[in-house]
Amino acid sequence: MIRRSRLPAEIAVLTAVIVALAVTAYVVQKVLFRRRGETTDITRSMDEALGPLILRQVELSQTVLSKAAVDKAFSTIMGRLQPALDQLAPGSPRIRIVVIDDPAINAFTLPGGIICVYTGLMRKLDSAEQMSGILGHELCHAVHRDPLALLARQMGVAALTGILTGGRGGEIAGRLVQTLVNVHYGRKAEDRADDFSVHLLALAGIDPFSFAQALQRIEKAEPNESGLLLWIDTHSPIQERIERARREAATLSATPRRIDVGWQSLLQRLSKTEE
Ligand SMILES: [Zn+2]
Image 1 (tube, rainbow, N blue to C red):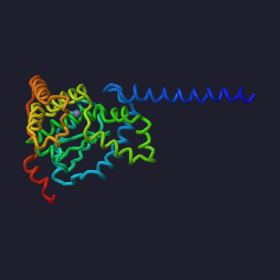
Image 2 (tube, protein in one colour):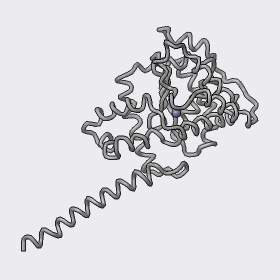
Image 3 (cartoon, helix red, strand yellow):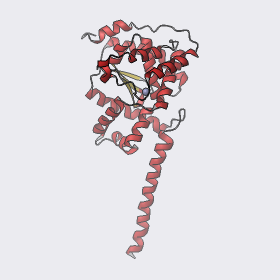
Image 4 (cartoon, rainbow, N blue to C red):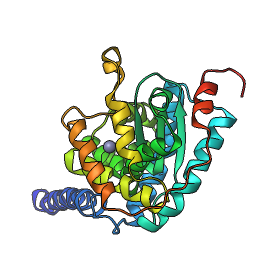
């Protein structure tokens, strides 16, 4: 009798496990990796809840620059890019720019539309327009929620849920920062981000060639800076990216208006201690 009654219980447990696995597989494949424009509420809320938690780890491990002049400059730049972004990709996350005081030539995107820009990258660029080009690329990753999809693939949905529900969340979030600081999403996603940037610039009334110019500036990093050059994926030759960005820009008509940011004086103020 005992044996007979245990059997349905075992089947029930097995069924529960299968259902749980199926639900996880469904979430990963059908929800987290849906195409653009099909972002679900689950994806959006997970993306937006994870962002600030991972940013906290960035703030603990890196020097976040807090200068009124820098905040004002990025606010002016986003003032130009945001309306174009809303037009090009409706329903995008609300964007937040965080500047990190570090010589690395790098920028990366966290979940929830948080874009981290290194002062080492800013110093390589000549203008707010070129900065907008790099931001445009990162904005594409934010719009497609590429960081969340990558983390879900690498860590599993359970680990991400673990961060949100506490416990060892901080420790896991710290590991996620390491993943995202130097991530490349593959040739297809990177090409898509490059193209997106060029179109976004044109739509924002910024010279669409600015992105190709930004790539050229980064390409000219000195040999002794190669260890700092984190933003460029060595599997995706930069010269090809420059040519592709130029070709794309040549197809667009734009009447550029300068962004009202004194870029060179901003760079000079980066290292000064006063605001
Ligand atoms: Zn990228």
